[in-house]
Image (tube, rainbow, N blue to C red; front, top):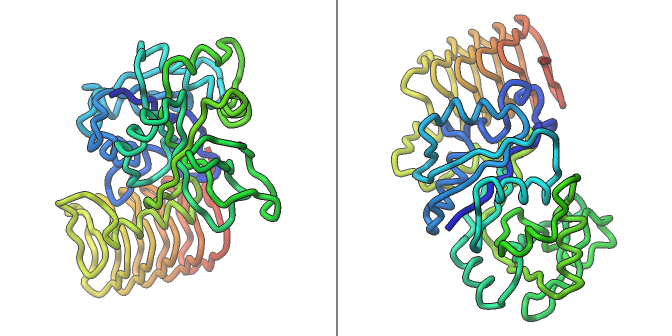
Length: 340
């Protein structure tokens, strides 16, 4: 089974973390999201994947020079200009020579969806394309999908107002496609799968959808990126070797002073947490330094960044790579520190 992984976005909602790193290469408790996503696909028989790249493609090719991620053979399709979602799927699939039923995954979604069940549903219905659905409280940020009792899609509404949504079942960013769908996607312009390809398949009755109560999280904002890490600390992960200490994960190369207090924290490689520091529900990316007496809550500290002594960072600060927060600083709210 082959898969197309959409990883070409610029990750603007996660800046400044994504100025130098694609969002799918940001770590979730020490492991890049792309590895977590492909690891889930490998459990359901996906053997080969093509990464649809656009933004900072070298970060992927340099990280995986042997062309294998989580046991899956990978190839790369680098867009010379943005093609939007459907255009990216077509370009990547054609580049990789996909010629049979294949899976499409939005690369910034964290999920434990049973992809095998989705494929079986797709084949049973004889669909040209099938969408995995997920229930949410507020569907206004997503593509909403309504179906008949067989799962045939009646309507696909992209980001409707909350009070006008026909259902709370949203497009969860995992699809199964037949190669025939690629023929309907124009090759020479931007094409949206949500706004063009899916509505066209609805009109011909070839689009189906399967609701699933699986864990699902769009990791593309600071709040949800933090949530993804906290969920993994809480046990929502398939890693057998994830060792926690009092609910936190501390890389073996990190140094945490014995007087520091950690609560549900990710402390990545070569981080330093000084004496009497307090860090709660936060992510410290590789090489981050929390100096003595500093307090960091519900925040993300980027690679090599330094939080000065006796500073206070509150929800939800994002400190970019190698930024320095002056000693004694008081920061809270949607604070973003760092540029290109």
